[in-house]
Image 1 (cartoon, helix red, strand yellow):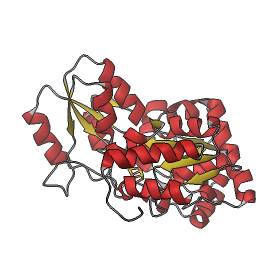
Image 2 (image 1 turned 135 degrees about the horizontal axis):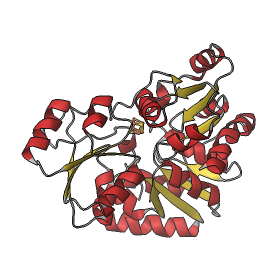
Image 3 (image 1 turned 45 degrees about the horizontal axis):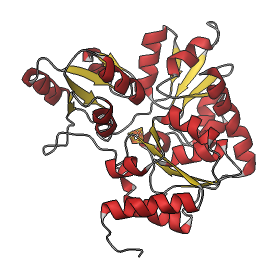
Amino acid sequence: MIGLKKDTALLQQEIRELAQLKNAVILAHYYQYPEIQEVADFVGDSLDLSRKAKKAGNDIIVFAGVKFMAETAKILNPEKKVLLPDLAAGCSLADNCPPGEFKKFVDAHPGHTVVTYINCSAEVKAISDIICTSSNAEQIVNRIPADQPIIFAPDANLGRYVIKQTGRQMVLWNGACVVHEAFSIDKLIQLINAHPQARLVAHPESEEHILKIADFTGSTRKMIDYIKTDDGHTYIVATEVGILHQMQKEAPGKTLLAAPSHEDNTCACSECAFMKVNTLEKLYNCLLHEGPEIKIEPELVKKAVLPLEKMLRWS
Ligand code: SF4
């Protein structure tokens, strides 16, 4: 069976049967391939999926997403087996915030509350005071006393957006997401000119010049909700293109256009190469062999769970 190309529907059916047999829950991020989203028990953004991972009553959690997400599920459920279809599913934001350098950065700013975006390693979580996602970043920062200095890491674009929304000054770690920094403003303006009635919705990981012209800025979940309830018809979506699958399902009457990136001259969309290393075949094999498994030292789990649980309490 392994290594053979199977029909997608058959593979999906076998994945569902295996998940049931092994009492496994499959969580998938909005940026996964549509055929993976379709076979998952839950599809969502980082905050939704953290909550689902925390509540999961299953023996096994299979995380169809990137490594920091599966690590988060493991930190919240240390007694459970957490699987990731491909351990190479990294993230540019997490990779560009090495724990040693981040610790030095934190030590250089004594007395600061460290607010860290969930897109970071377990080690970086362990040296943070509270974790946030793009859904709750403003809410978390607003709950910190006004006279308390803050470090925000690792996404500087999200940090600048939160500064603008909350009016709080924060010290930023200079990280970025390769996908959200790849949007081409020139091509985007051409697309807007070709569709003057379209509304631009953007993820706050996008650069400031994109956010400045956006009609709406929000997390993946908030973008979907905006498009569902807004009275417009056509939307240009500036985030990873995988989200269009769930958006179209929840807003079937709307026309959705992917924001164009610098590189792309074919499909005019931005894909996260890390998210896309997961395939249906790898998901099947991962469930069958119960690996690759996420393993984190218990001492690290004990430290990293504190800022995560604080986030769940605060949001
Ligand atoms: S889209 Fe960006 S932030 Fe999300 S996993 Fe990919 S590289 Fe990381």
